[in-house]
Length: 465
Ligand code: UD1
Ligand code: MG
Image (cartoon, rainbow, N blue to C red; front, top):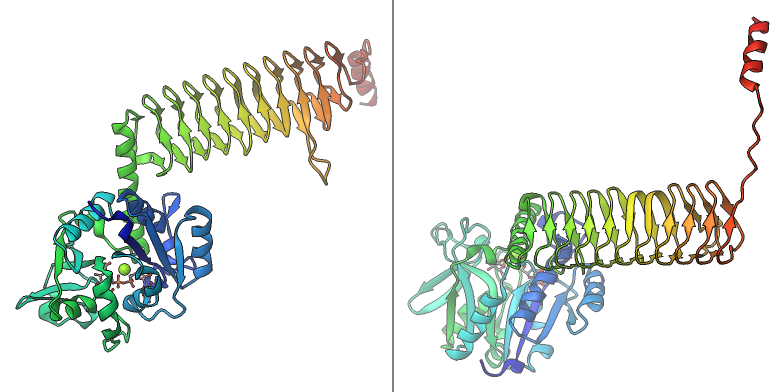
């Protein structure tokens, strides 16, 4: 529809969220691995509303910090005192008056869909309304403002101010509106705080505009779930469950196989290709991607990592901020930490921790190793029990191991050190000096066999008796 640039969205997020009983501001309460506010801003973006602002207040600097980091285009407006939703809109007028229409949303409706929002905007523009607001019929209307339509005038009565008769109305206000800004700017000064909360209610503008003869239209939406307001931890966990289901369905429709949706968690920013197979109890968070044909074993947790195609991850593997290239095999019980790059066809096995390191193509770390701040070339084998001693108590040091090398079991590598291509280290060696290409490094005391020692020991024991 026309004039997309003349439309902006204002999210009200200054409230304390008292019913959450938490130190975290309400809009930053998490749903899966993202704050509630993220989902609202995603819906706004999905509805093709390009300009947005958030009203901050309670713990405002925390909210502003999140927005500056993740939503650079989003403006923030500070409401110093939280005098109500109407007040929040009023103090933002110098921003929204530059647009023709302003969509207003509360910061606590994370399940709102982009299509619902877009439909509201399109209906409002098509019908040339002055105010269009979403209404719905929740299972339990308690806590919501009731929509009263009488003698051609619409008004919203807050639960706290409603009469017993009005409380019986099931038709409620979602808190999502679109206003023609020229109408809003003229009538917002008429708001008063004469109600049970001594607050400026944005909802009062509906009746003010209606009485002034403006075109105020309730826009009824059937899907009540999308419009649920999240005010306490129980509602937050219900919304989390619904969001989780929604994301899993999107992935399954893309061709991802999820063995047990009930125990699987996938964050909203993760992208999984078709024919990825997810075993039970898997979590995939952040900006993770998983290529086609890969399998993720039970109890594995992947965050902010890029996993290539046909990667096989067995159970209990934790991968955080890493890349794993195609056909690699990992696990069970491996911890792949920040900044690690695992190349194609390589293998990381049981009880292995790797941090800020790269493992070349076809290389193996099959068992019980710690690899930190290391670069390992192609086709190299790291024997069981190998440890890179990267920390001297003050600083971290690097280890470099070349191609086609064989690090014997239980090698202790004291960094900084370079072990060149096609080298061997003898099992149990402590490597403190560089190893040149093609060399065998042995660093351990020579074995000495003391003949007949056991017999002599037994004889002396008998004598003592
Ligand atoms: C509000 C509506 C109610 C509607 C319901 C839908 C009003 C008066 N009531 O009630 O009709 O049915 O939403 O969920 O608007 N906020 C500010 N500054 C303030 C006060 C609030 O930014 O001074 C923000 C809050 O952070 C919140 C949003 O506005 O995100 C709504 O406030 P909330 O206290 O949740 O209002 P409800 O009681 O849910
Ligand atoms: Mg609310």
